[in-house]
Picture 1: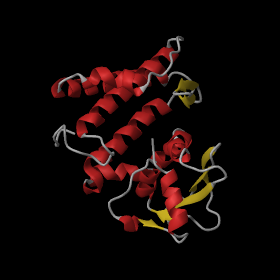
Picture 2 (picture 1 turned 90 degrees about the vertical axis):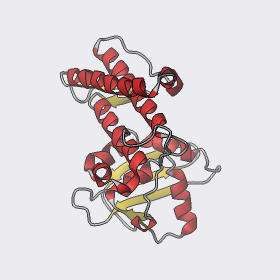
Picture 3 (picture 1 turned 180 degrees about the vertical axis):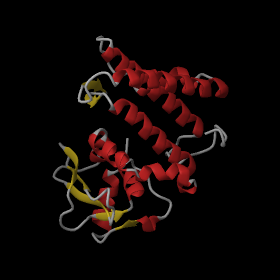
Length: 240
């Protein structure tokens, strides 16, 4: 972030670097607020993006950067406190529930993903964490269904998409990501490889696809299902 102009564009469509800082500061604040309230026995609802980000947009660039650091530190304190409760504790979050440890993990994923939005594939230090197994697992288990919701809205009645996203030859990521969607339902899960894959790619590119991103090199995505089917699958994987 600090190596670029605040108004510089990013791989996150229509967002500048400053927009990402606002989003990340708002995420950290809201994750800490919701998890902290749960720990205090006084649960609160999740605020929408405008409620949490509006005040941050009014800050100048220096104060916004300070706000990000302060809110990240506050989330870290709440996440450490949450280590004292069972890891399988469900906490309400944006119309669903997340396990208590997922709050810190979700912030980590946001930082990795939006870090890539700023640098693209050009900075290996930023791109490398996309390949880590936890990134795929969290994307599927904690965030998978919301990630499919936007793309599913574009389906016509009676239209259905089923796909297997495979990482070829990966010892730690030898499970397919299996997605399905129609106008009424979406599903996403990890499953053992079976049959033909809809597309094959490396681990990092698969995470980017799940979040509606595209690696700079299109050759990282391989498929034999034809342009119509592949186009529908990539349309479903449009992110938030």
